[in-house]
Amino acid sequence: MTAPAAPRSFWRALPFHVLLFVLTALSVWLVGGVELAIGVLSILFAHEMGHYLAARYYRIDATLPYFIPFPFPLFSLVGTLGAVIRIRSPFPDRRALFDVGIAGPLAGFAVALPVLFAGIWEAQVAMIDPRPGILYLGEPLLFQWAGELIHGPLGPHETLVIGPWGMAAWFGLLVTGLNLIPIGQLDGGHVVYGLFGPQIHARVSRAASWICLTLLWFGPQWLMWALLMRVLGRAHPPTWWDGASLGPGRRAVGLLGAVVFVISFVPDPIQFSWSEFVNELLTLL
Image (tube, rainbow, N blue to C red; front, side):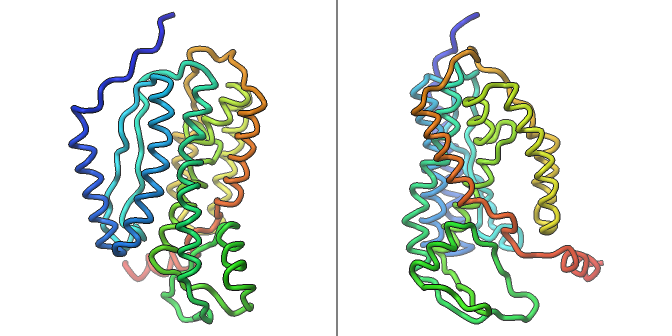
């Protein structure tokens, strides 16, 4: 067995990553303005750099973040599909895998907190509009708690109308929750593999992939994710040394990651029913 290779220099690819970042910033700005761009990009940047810096610490070959511009409001509420880094060498052990996997969501979550409170502070309480065509977003638990803390309990026919900071926080929590799903090579999958090893990871990943199918009950917005989780989300390559165990400190951090997942994940991010989907489809036809 040979040791993992040292990470490659990123200078050669740096201009391309910078270009993608600039295009994504422009894309988000076009969709929602300066505040949205600052909020979304700061959360995404923190998330991906958490992964990248942890990978560099363990001398794992990883790319800089690839930001994904998507300036089409009809399909992307914030002008981007997120950002990713690519790991190009095996993880040395389960400790490194855990650290790299959890670093991104926790870093992104830490930056999302002040953005969230700025967003809730600027939000306005309004009556729910029953007319069709109004977009309503599902709220993660943390969003609900922050709203009640700042604006107090809402009436049965009231809702919060969020601005650009609120939209940035909502998207940041959505990204955090989705990445912490314990499937395959998602961040949550890395965490479960690091904590419990390959056998437990395989069982949890298999169960979670089936559970993802039940999310289709909430609406057609989960169709793509459910299919991706079933097709791509289950396998996880071994580390160089799967025998390494994690101490109580990392297990406590893993518990923190589970809490972040619970309060960030929202099962119905866009409240769009199957009947509305069919009606829209029939209108197009």
